[in-house]
Image (cartoon, rainbow, N blue to C red; front, side, top):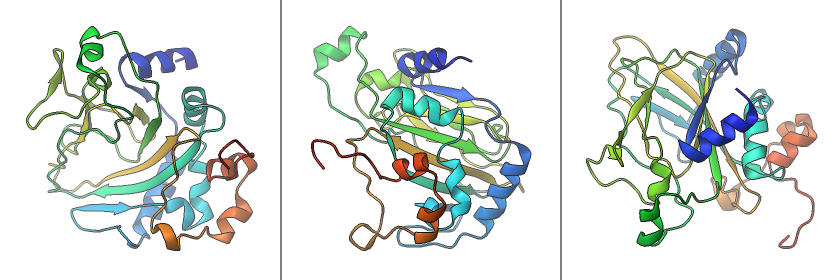
Length: 248
């Protein structure tokens, strides 16, 4: 799939699935790395494990900030000076009930007359890349997306499962595939109905230069010196080492 086709999918559907971004070795490496994570600050464990800012815990996570072709798509969509606003590891266990349909961030509320036209799409401000570390089928709990729902310019109402006739659909894929989607598309995480399988995933969130990097725990945040030492120039930019600009 060409870069232009990927960008068109983000504009029209709000998401695109990239196949084979990770090979089996790196999938296994990341699953083992999630095994070793311990909760910090707002992280938690249980039926759903959630770990924020994993890039700052060990240089092992650095190469997954700028994986081709994900980084090429992020830079094409958000600008060559885009940066990372989060890298989060997830693990859902059997019995996890899933997550309701939602959007992550709405850049701007639009007037009703503009939404009604149906031909206007807000420029992308934030993209999320979900790197799947498990084979995703209906039992393990796929990500569900509502194609085109980013044009609604609002959050879904309780119980709402479709936008202009397009219903939520599951993203079924293989370990190593990546789903890239806009922050304003309606999506949800499915319930893990399997008996024994864990659903592992690494998210990387990219924002335009003017989207703030809000790394918890905020006022006490400090970059890990070992991470900065081993980061490439591109990775350092993604972590926030930008050239001087008007508001710096």
